[in-house]
Length: 424
Ligand SMILES: [Ca+2]
Ligand SMILES: [Ca+2]
Picture 1 (cartoon, rainbow, N blue to C red):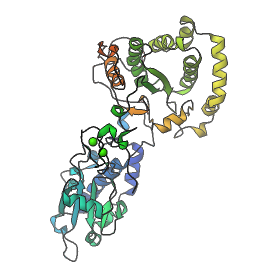
Picture 2 (picture 1 turned 45 degrees about the horizontal axis):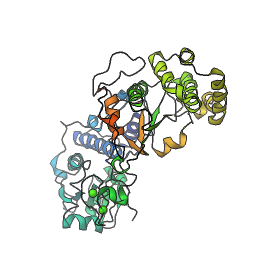
Picture 3 (picture 1 turned 135 degrees about the horizontal axis):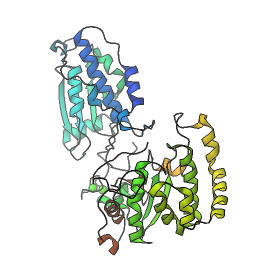
Picture 4 (picture 1 turned 45 degrees about the vertical axis):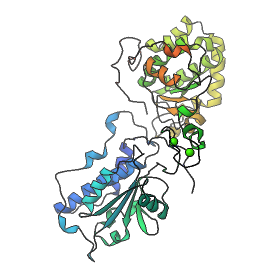
């Protein structure tokens, strides 16, 4: 059985409009009695939650947060199922075993349990923890790899509501396992708990499971920061405005590259600007931060090229070559190739977007590890300082803790802790 090499936390993903459509398509046509309607409502909630748990990577970018729904919005709590469905026709109570792990912070199964108890009233639930003898035995006997696991006794197949879940279960031999998209491997090393979790004598970062898994186990003498943005994304410009003061404070203490998300949500001007920035960064690197600072004020490309002394002729030559190399204009003009028919692709960093599963703007990668961070100078300083083998003195110099405003302009700061939105 292949072991998962990381124990990173599951990422909470929203259910997109696209996926909501799938839910709608999958649901059973309701009859007119209220019991059935209630059951269908619960099933919709369950299916939405299964999909919610299963999503590894968004396949459909959405522009605004209001295009997403949470699974809770599909539940109608006032509608209850009649209690005469507690047993199968042969009189058996449906049995369910849930195996989870108290060490896993993202393995809460209470919502599942509630949904399933509504579909199968009177459900006989046994909850086991992997860290107990019974839990580990059940985990091994049923060839489970990732937790949490939700396992039905096969008697559920004769229950009249089995049709509601039969497309979402796998046969493990003895039992039926609900397909959840779980990702916590209880047999792997947890990288930040100070314990030897898998019994190989190596704790946390000393364990091979943790190499490449979390930033704390991948510190470097000179960290490498890769910041993925779309040049006109309000949240991309926001993080750039937070990042530049850190670059200015640290000088060459860490390496950095501004990279571009594999699709452009802001039209031709963005494609042109990203070729422009790519070339300034690549060939006239000492002008890059001054140019970017100027550009982030009002997005005025030509004025900023002139005011920061970028060599226009050299830039033109580079942009033409980069356009050919990345087929940027060709992709812009070929609407058939656009992502979801809406956004031109932009290929300057295609492989790295795929490697790090960059889904939108901004995305932050440090020492080859995708990380989450705030967008203020202080927040970015903190996460970058955690990537140094030996943090330099600059880590002790306080930087601005206020978030820059989203969009263009170096003016007033946004409230700390404010938008966590992305473009994409
Ligand atoms: Ca270990
Ligand atoms: Ca550990």
